[in-house]
Amino acid sequence: MYPASLTSLPSVPSTHPSSESKGVVLVVDDDPIVRKLTRQMLSQLTDAVHVVASGEDALGVAPQLDPDLILLDVTMPGMDGFEVCERLRADSRTREVPIIMVTALNDRESRLRGLEVGADDFISKPYDRMELRTRVKTILRVNRYRRLMDEREQRKRAWQGALQVLSDLLAVRDPETFGVARRLERRAVDLARRLRISDIDTIRLASMFCQLGRLTVPDSVLLKSSSNHELTRGEQAIMRSIPESSRRVLAHIPELNRIGNIVYWQDKNYDGTGFPLDDLDGRTIPIASRIIRVARDFEQLIESGLSSDEAQLRLHSQDRWYDPAVLTALDAQILDEVAEYSLRAMTIRLNDLRIGMEILEEILTVDDRLVVVGAGTTITGPLLERLHNFARLKGIREPIVIKRPDSSLNGSMSA
Image 1: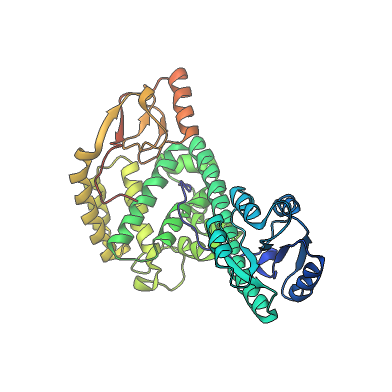
Image 2: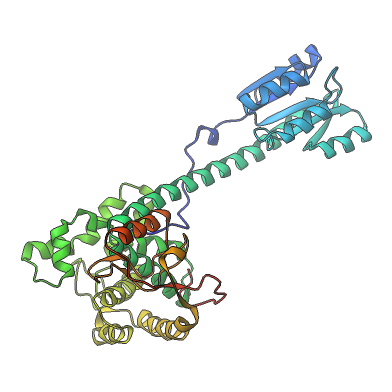
């Protein structure tokens, strides 16, 4: 079971230099004395004050400088401040930069025009030293916070993109395991919601990463285990070490340390038996670990060929291993699934399969020997290409059972 998708991540503290910087200001004024005085007044508030003498120069410098604030005089020869502001707002590179327009005292008409072209604030000339410093300091602080949030969002998207690429590659390498992992994630998240657990993101991440340690297990041992062949003592130890291996892999990402600890306890039984051997049982086991244990064991039983009812009975026959509250939530979940399935399922041909569709039943080769895509998988570009390649080489069993795309149901397994 490998991570299938990522929709939400823990917040990542900013390490960009701008988190410590004071900001950069661009001053646009045709008067050299004003430029000199303004630079002197703002030098201690900022990292740098750049000055230009015309609107044309401002339009050339601003996109490359990427300032945190532009102090723009309204009255300049040639291109006036209104046109400069309007053109800065039309340029995607400078659209978000705060602009303070410098107007004559009580020039109401200029201020109204400035608002129309996109100015953020106004200050009168000649400057009041304290007013200028206060306005600039406030706007720089707000803009710095905005940039920090933008940087954090960009890193989050980059991380999500990298994990999605990894998920796609793992899905191509091992589609059967990928399908189980996707179902596990959806089931665990829904169980958490039924139990009114507020930290859904943690449950989602822990369920996605809970079997990451399988990457360290030789393929021969995984195959032997999945085929229900008797494992040697050494092979059993390797399989038992999957949670610990998962935690070690996740330890390379400091922000996922908590997820690693949840993954570590996923095999601990509710009655205190099982691995790890630490003295922990019942409610002292993290609730996320208890939820993942129930969801994972249920999905593995389904994968082994048991029906939903049979898997449910098997878990109840070993109820000392599981949190009773989580088992009760699973019972309710299964009832809802049975009622919903007939309403949400539909069949299509391979040629009608599209990216984003969710597979409800395994897609097999025509000889039923190979699972090409596991149940519960959402089709991605690489998976769709893989299916068409298998169709050409070995043939794909059709029709394919998918979740109805236009379903408006708020089913129990929606994630």
